Image 1 (cartoon, rainbow, N blue to C red):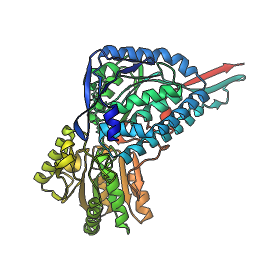
Image 2 (cartoon, helix red, strand yellow; image 1 turned 60 degrees about the vertical axis):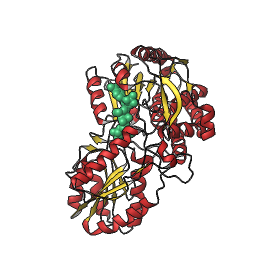
Image 3 (cartoon, rainbow, N blue to C red; image 1 turned 60 degrees about the horizontal axis):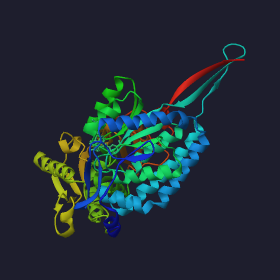
Image 4 (cartoon, helix red, strand yellow; image 1 turned 180 degrees about the vertical axis):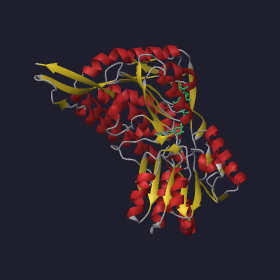
Length: 489
Ligand code: NAP
């Protein structure tokens, strides 16, 4: 990986608009290696509103032909794209790990997942079915059909720089929409490669466009553009609310995937070692920088001590290191700002009276000095009113709260402004069903962590999301609109 980066780093990249690479109008900014702070991975556009406008116009111009392209042809192109992701898995993983920091095995898995989600989306192109309804009058047929909405603005954060763009672009293309994609400022490198692969797979010019630049500079131009019919946004709740307000002003539709404070509730469950394995994996994958990361463990008081021992044993197995270390199971945080946030929450947790049982130390020796490494942290003696129990930290910090009984555990779990994912560990079927029904979250996992499937709807309630869920069949509701047709014959 390192020699590949030496050979391939440091180039200048542009925006991909109307099938051509072009320099942005605002010059370029360097993007650095997450685990080698001094190494420039590339120079990327600092785009302007004019760049956004050109990209939206290109997507608008391409929509007519692309939406009329037969669904099997669109699906075939996406199937080819999925094959290309697998062919170039290693290069994509290198770029992803370098800019984001996650371990190579996580990055490889992310690329394969993007291929699998694309194949599911490709199949959906052929399922844009409507209903044929009995006529109300003689010789009048009535039917419904689904049509693509038009140009979609897709905006992603920096934690999954391959699968998040693909999760938006592939379904959009499957349903016949065209796209302008804006990656996070910190992670544009893998996305550039994705554009090359979509083009190589046969996606025509203008159907997918990439504009790289700062959200604070170009976000409003993209979200507010009158030719943008829908906005698929993944990121913080604060930005999501802002985008929702802007979109509502002109009735543009939105699909918002936002923050979370996801609980794992441990009730009467015999295999606490299994629960701990699932919780630790869900909490610390991607160094906890995951919307569905478990960040609160709510455990029955009489099980708490035993569970904490299992959690500590499981966390002790985590090896923090750079992506190219084959033994590393957790990479650095993406940048200094993220590390500062995590350390601030660890300080707050202590100040609030929680006990730091393990971790939370910054690693600075040797090659650790080149990245933002912190060891996975576990707090106990956490109470529901503490900020570390309420606010999204988006880092490797796990809090243990104790509950008297199942009912108070449920109350604690629901006592959050977020509602993305939740896990429940129980041997009692009645509790499993009861919690699945009463937990206020978009996704509930019984006896396993918060990993999601490539074909199941993905989304949240409360301040964790808005609009149709992504990934599964629910995407149809976002990328297409209904038309009702009456035919007299
Ligand atoms: P963020 O600050 O909201 O940024 C997300 C994206 O929005 C970035 O591309 C950002 O661009 C862009 N943006 C910033 N200002 C904008 C504006 N005025 N208009 C339009 N776009 C704008 O979030 P983040 O810190 O990158 O990501 C972490 C957050 O994402 C966490 O809250 C996490 O829970 C959430 N997340 C949710 C899911 C989910 O599926 N629910 C998945 C992953 C992450 P810049 O990078 O240029 O600022």
